[in-house]
Image (cartoon, rainbow, N blue to C red; front, side, top):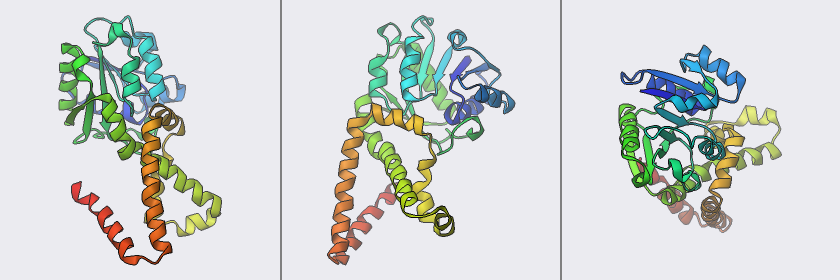
Length: 275
């Protein structure tokens, strides 16, 4: 099986490292518009070769590991792939991407969201084993071709990922609460502190709590701008509900309702009984 990966950053680079260990993978070609990423990917041994975008069509499986708007644009350019080709996107949103797939290649396409990653980006952020034991959500799989379904399942099983299946609309609402809203909050926390504290105070006083809460703000702004655009309504709903919770806690603190403060925190702590 010959693989092509478009986008050689954290997700694409880490995928390449894991795929290279599978005995049914013959070769991995990479494509990236960033020339430095191309050089880094070869230097780090992430891919066997760098190819122009048009050449990725020769692969058996094409992974799109690029920002979500880029995925939509790339799909328009892949309408002449072979009937047997499998195209798998790794985007953080799904509904708009799925609805944008040209009908001619809908059977070729598999919508996937690996629930993994770090706040770092670029080829140097690639991690061997990033996908192992993580969840991958496969959306609207009933509209994919049989070859494509089986190919995607085979690859994700070989990567030792846990597979979940849902509708793309359902996925985007869940992702807004579990992934997208936390990123929005992290950026906001970082900006709040930077507007109030000089950098010396931040360096001296920032400990585990602040580092944990602001960690996601290290993520790529260009990537997350696209995510926020594509999943705007769900993210706004999630932020609205978060604001209600935060205002409730604020009011309890203002009114010295310490038992309620304690109970709210105790309820929140139960989240970690789940995972």
